[in-house]
Amino acid sequence: MSQARISLTVSAALLATASHAHDYWFERNAEDYLLHRGHRFSQHQGEKEVPFDPEIITGTYCLRPNEVTPSPAVVGEGYPLRVEGPCIALMVTADSGYWSQTLTGTKNQPKDELFGVLRSWHALESVKRVEAWSERLSDPLSTDLEFVFSENPFALTVGDKLRLAVVFRGEPAQGVTVAYHGDPRGVTGDDGRINLRIRHKGLQLITASLEEPLHSNSADKRVRSTILIFEIQ
Image (cartoon, rainbow, N blue to C red; front, side):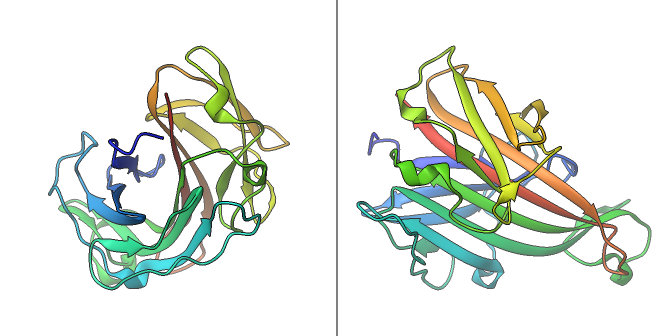
């Protein structure tokens, strides 16, 4: 993987809540990674950097070279969040709390603290960056919503089909909407699988989201979103 490409980006726009779109992206720093948030790459207007409290991070998983079990990665304090590498694959999970869309904008607050809420949700997010192939990547690194590979993606080229599965708590996730660079491409089947055609070289950005109703005064639903990023040369 080219070290010149130090930045891999992910759009954290929830597919069902596109009105609130943040980008998360990793920048390489020697063998470590810096996790940023803002509006650097999406078409959604907003500040270039939107710092987050490291307390929203709920898990870090680093699959290191020559290892088969992911280990927790050490994270630093402050923003951007430093995550210790190197990793064949790195996954970060976050709970960014409750969000409410109102007539005056989207607020990072539960609906029972605001007036005139149009819709609200609890956002749980995960971001997975893959640097190189390992057979271990056929299985999830976490129990969160996550993409896993059916084959080595780095052996593919433009026009080939990428075979993936979406899993949640280690089980296939059925009926999950999957998008390729923001373009919805289908819904997972009973086995959690979906095939996507590679359209270009370089950065591959694949996202998925899963909703469930919440019987709560804080939000109408819980939205889990996951992002997979890797590069094809």
